[in-house]
Image (cartoon, rainbow, N blue to C red):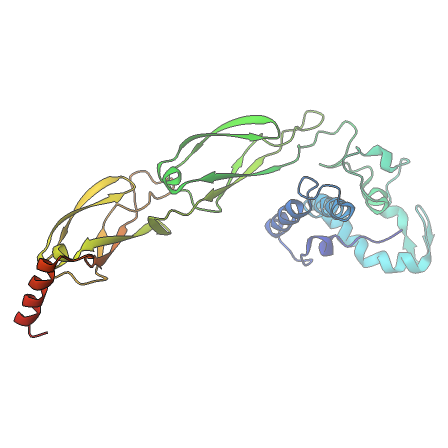
Amino acid sequence: MEYKDYYKALGVDKNATTDQIKKAYRKLARQYHPDVNPNNPDAERKFKEVNEANEVLSDEEKRRKYDELGADWQRYQQAGAGRGQTQGGFDWSQYAQQGGFSNADFGDETDFSDFFGSIFGNMGGRGAGGNRASAGPDYQAELELSLEDAYQGGPRTLNVSGKSLRLTIHPGVEDGQTIRLRDQGGPGRNGGPNGSLYLTLRVLPDPRFARNGNDLTQEVQVPLYRALLGGEQVVDTLSGPVKINIKPETQNGTRLRLRGKGFPVYRKEGQFGDLYLRLTVQLPQQLTDKEKELIRQLAALRND
């Protein structure tokens, strides 16, 4: 029987914490999930290995028993022992499950190895079939949002595995943020709970604004004459038009800060980042003869 290195299967070391194991499992399960790799036998095999490794390492009792076995496995192989035998100083019966276990005792969806069954057959578990309750599989999905959608939040509807789901997006979500929707994954077995839906939000770029956390930056073009003489100008923000004051002799590249006009802080009602305006002086084009003459006069006055 082949020894299964569950730590290697998940890419973690033997001192890995429960959270590290969970994180590694979720990453690999998404990578090799059959829905992502249709008709790919290698991915299917890897997916089963990852699930089996997680079944053992995420369960405290199973992990302890597996770790104890690992220290004795070399002696077992050298002894050439089978279940219930004691050879070469190795007593397999302390590890092997009794009761005529076979892979048929598990549901078709698990398909655990003989190695797993020989050790854990009577222990059951989240992946076991029979009459034990087990949670349903988790689903993965993505939802695209415009920058304004992410700013405003509100109800959204999406379809996952033929099921229409309605959810509320809180203002201030970020690109790549993942939301967990409990009980919206696959159905549980034998009365077990449904899995969860992990929804990744994709906030699309906006040509008007650059986002950095809760702050926004916007390029604002200012006519040359307003930059020289000063005046008021209206700029668009995500919360609506705002009137700003341009000081006389404003230089190209000047930055203005509008407090509280940036992005809402996620789940902190009434808190917002800032909006930074970068002023670009816009030179006039298609000058008339009179305009050119006036500019010549101005240049002469300034000795330019």
